[in-house]
Image (cartoon, rainbow, N blue to C red; front, side, top):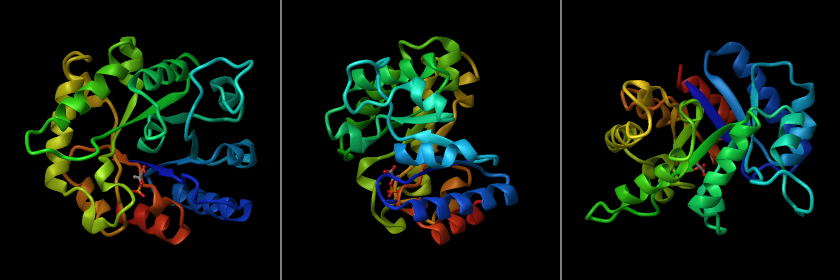
Length: 247
Ligand code: PEP
């Protein structure tokens, strides 16, 4: 299993960042779970260069461009230099700021072109009785996968994060049964872009109020390859409990 801890902007001190990183290193030495930390950009410079552990780093966002006159942007080349392996793309909190499917697609292609693995977030804001949200999901996946080469499609990681389930508590997260239905649907859509069984090999994560009390049931038999926890990854004790609960 893969756990990508999205610290978002919860971690606002170097001391806390270092403590969380130490916890992640200890956990990765003790457990088989693959741990990735998606941290604010300044912490990449602080933590990643001295990293000798199995913990990998993700950026929370990536520029679609290659540098130059682009104030505030962080390019793939710089992320690469900082030792980044993955990047989140299209998180709902960035889509809420105006990131479109087209921009997400550009960023995904830019990440691949620079050997950074994109973790693309998709998910509906709400569920309507006529299930139009399934079409929205399909459109989000299409925008990303359609322009990619086969090898890039295979390497792209998808994080299914229903927006209505984000930032709440375990009791309001998606149920294992609904998650199973969604992973089947998403893999069916992926089958349009990847031949045969290769759609089954795309790594699929779930995110949305994953906590120590529900991670195990969301992992068992639902078809996910891991999780993208937000708030539960920004506290050392809770993150430890998450990883331990997955054992
Ligand atoms: C997220 O926003 O990626 C997320 C899953 O957040 P939380 O775990 O806090 O719901």
